[in-house]
Image (cartoon, rainbow, N blue to C red):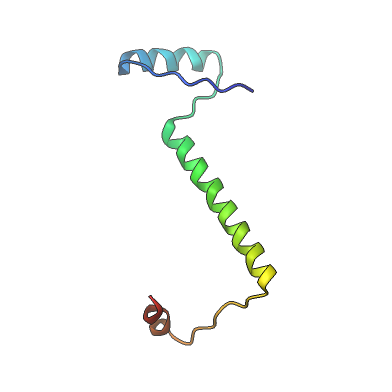
Length: 74
């Protein structure tokens, strides 16, 4: 698989290019979709690292008896 980034000067050229890519049955991924996918991947990595850290230090999750305790910590 190869990724090619193309920048167009105006909407008319972008629409024409999208039409050609659609005929060729090529995937089109917008910059917004690409950023969203990257953010999701980073979130998974962060969660995985946190899990490993908790496992290593054998920390236990805090037990809160009320929402007030949670907000007091903030």
